[in-house]
Length: 56
Image (cartoon, rainbow, N blue to C red):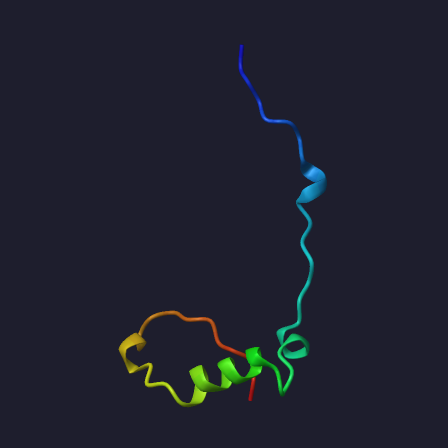
């Protein structure tokens, strides 16, 4: 007889996140985003599909 895992569908919740509201100036995340987007040479990744950071 098959041994199925219990149904835990109550744990599969998707929460909408707006990164523009999450990455606030003065936070570590904002600083990291700024450095990655503006200071690092990422030319080695040209032509590859990468997610864009929303900090400006």
